[in-house]
Length: 271
Image (cartoon, rainbow, N blue to C red; front, side, top):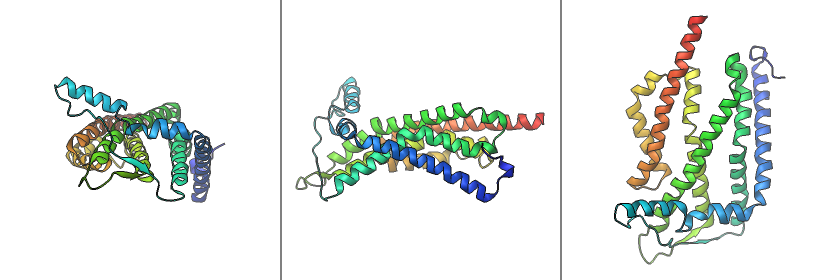
């Protein structure tokens, strides 16, 4: 049984946090071990799929392009090949990819552990929302991962894989470079899509307010564009495609912040 917050010392909190981290890490390692044995599915069927010109995202953009009477967005080939230049490169890629897959699959459990750690600081009625919190957080994370896989990754692979400074340069891509690009795209988008959840807790502890978020909306736009430029290749279309959902998440965050403040004011009034 969890101790009440007021009865716990700083060291008690540290010990409590340690065990939450241990259990989360153990879940990641178990799922990573399982993922390790599905090498063909993870690499050939999933991670290497965006290299195929017939990948669903490329076909979608091609249809959109043809709808407007052009083939400008149609992709017929990916002019690069993979190579491994170090003895342990493929094994290291396999290990870290398995860990990444383990983290993604274990995310709902990690969120559950996070909730159990912070729940003593919440009101009784807020503790009852554990299921909703886990479902919404996990949903946003998985949507972000899918966005990273079906939008950010293809845009990045297509742009960087076709970019060339000279015909004299052969496009032989290190496997570690490619897989790192895919992994970072999935994780970055998954975590970025947690923005409403982050704003919820920042509002709860008083660090942000709806007024603050509205006041600095223009500044947030600049930050979002910079973030989109970091996540995606440096072309305007890709940055706009990535920036749009992040801006929508920011607006949702303002709405959530309003709801939190309204509930806090109501609770104070009733008290």
